[in-house]
Length: 216
Image (cartoon, rainbow, N blue to C red; front, side):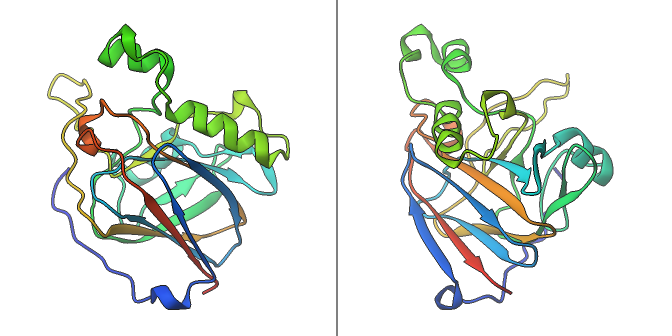
């Protein structure tokens, strides 16, 4: 992914207006207002944070991995990346990043993908797609199963191989690593704290994530 420049935030945790710890296997959905800042902390290290974003003014206008990659001419996401919606509207900008390894190609784990990757016996295991469905059911506002579209897997290490494939490799995050987003418009943030015990990206040990929000 090339040279990574670590960028830290000057915002202090005690000044946050929202502070929530999401346990592994759980999720969170909430609206972030234009101008607010959201930080997601990898509490234990190497925890996969599967996320989706929507335009709060029109939830059918969701995050677009393709538009984001094309606009920045890079498949890897880090400080400076603007997360674009399907219609090109900017939803968030990454303004700080102490990890620098975030994937938007591998997709969220599901019962079906887990059986392909890890074996049929994993079919009944909880997965991020199920968490997304539970959260949007609680949220309402027109979101439904069809709105589970390409996502971002923050902290997941998914390098592209020389032949164009994807490799789900050991994670490179560590306890306390974080990234921070600036909301460029009113947006909905949907998080699944991955429960997957078979994922090498989280060292086979799912751990909590912490969400902090500042008004400025």
